[in-house]
Length: 136
Image 1 (tube, rainbow, N blue to C red):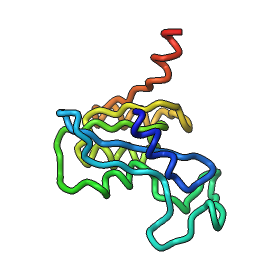
Image 2: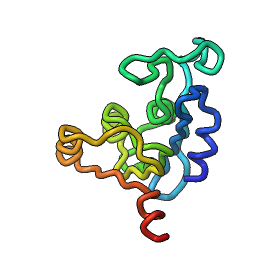
Image 3: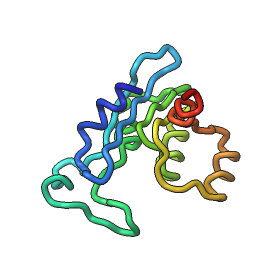
């Protein structure tokens, strides 16, 4: 998770800096990603965010960037993410072979349809901060 936090520092959107690390079952890093603009496009940090429905659409999400950075297809990956994945990133991660999703911070809202989809797909993310807060 600390590596995901380091990757997040490279994020170029001031609204949320998110990092994602994909590891294999051998705990070796397969790819990392952070939220930033499309290659060749201006970044939020220099040109401002483009907000639609209270979300910045200028950036590529960290989870998508990590999947794009994979050099090959893997069947059993674990994703460590600084923030809870949105529904689209959740679907992309699980379609890319992620079998476990661990995140540090809740972000956005869980809603009935998201929970139903998670049950269908069968990958239930868990929040490390919840475990940390329970231990205190």
